[in-house]
Every structure is written in C-alpha cells, then in structure tokens.
Length: 307
Image 1 (cartoon, one colour):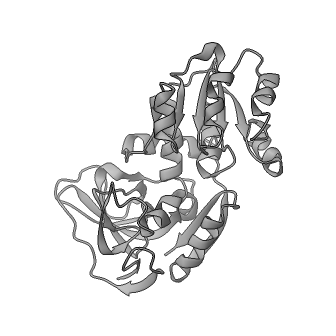
Image 2: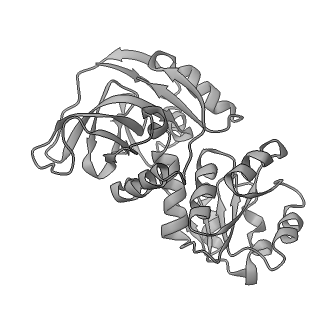
C-alpha cells in the first residue's frame, strides 16, 4: 500500500510502499478515504513529543480517519465489512498512522461515520471534535445556564467548541482576530478580540463574569481569575498550558479516543447542530504542502488529505 512516512525527526515527508497493516482480534482494517491535518502531526514529526510518545521510524503520521471497513477481527461485533466509519486512531506508539491507503484501528477508536457527512467532512471531525466535546462535557460540565469563554474560538477545535457549547444551551463568548468575528457570530458566539484589554471587553458582555473558560490558545489564560464569576477557578480547562491551568485549579485536556463520544458528534452532525469548515484539501502525494499550510497558522477550518 502507499503511505506517507517520515524517516527521521525533521525530515520531509515521503511516499513509500508498505505492507498492509495486521488486524488484531478487536481491531478493524479501514480502507482510508480521507484524513485531516492536526498540528500534533507535524509536531510529532519534528520530535516535539519524543519525551512522551514512542515513535518507531519510519513512521506513518496521522490520527484522524474516515473510510470503509475492509476487514474485522474475530471478536468485533459492532462493525462489519463495508461499514463507513470515522475515528481518532491514536495508538500506544506512533508508526502506523492514517496518512495511508489502509490503517488498522482498535475498535475503541472508530465508529460509524455521520450518515450525512462526506468522507472529507467526517475526517475533519474526530480529533478536534473530541477535544472540544470532552473538554466541555467531561471536564467543564457545561450546562444551559453557563456563560462559556472560549479562547481561540475560530480555530479547528474552537469552532467545534462554540457549536457544542451552544448545543448544550450555553451562551458563548469567543476570542478571535477581528477578521473572524463574523464567522463566530455565524456559529452562535459573541466575539471579542484577544490581547490587551480582553478582561474589559469580556466584562462588557458579561458584567458578572463567565462561568467556564476553555483555553485553546494559551495566550490569555492568565486573565482567567479576572473573568470568571466569583473567581471560581475550578471551571477552566486548557489544551495548551497544563502547568498554568493546574495552578488555577483547572483541568489539562489531552483528547482520548472514545467511540461513544464519536457517536455523540455524529448525531450532532446529522441533526444539523454541528457543521464542519474545510479550508483546503490535498491528495496524499501533497501531504507536505498540507502540513506547510497548517504550520502557517492562518487557515480557518480543517485541512483534509484525500486518499
């Protein structure tokens, strides 16, 4: 099969011919239709997560996937050959990722894709969508009477966070550059510009403070005590700055594969609550270009690689 690989940290991506992956008893083999780019992909390839993840070279990057089940392990009962699936295929080590024609996936990492989603849309959801969902539902316990402040609300995770928080009935204030304010309004958020003066701008919209903070950027986390209602520091979560958020009594969120949470996201997409913005698509051969665009940091929405 054809796959994208990196042969050493910092090396450019290459196309290689590899053996098809083996399928364990509780795994499935997926014929990949699309995957999406997340910053963690190129950070791993640069060696940035070497202290916490085993990386076996040459490695196929990628954790997001959508595709069709081609083979199931003997103990698999919830999926069948021919099922269209999507998932966050993070394994215990980095090697056999989703930037490939085929990927083997533990059943805990995949489920049936949203029925109304294209493969490209489905591939854009898992990592970013699960990050937002788990932060808001499992860590912050967001409810209908909440006012949620999302830092970095126009990014891949942020746009999902806004929509999910709104689906829970919460009021959402989102930080973003002024060029993304109309976009956030379209998602149902009240936009504010990040940076100096942020506390005053948030307090203008929520004089008594917000009840929960989700940090997706790391740049304004230190304002949390000044914007939270009653200084309730425990209702803050960050995917960026684990040390600071724990000092604030909050939660550091590192997304986990979870098929049940993926089912919730699929339902939100199929009922029209959740939308996906795709910034660009690239074929497998142009994965390096996809990474470079993502590294630029100025795209809105997800970058998808089609297989």
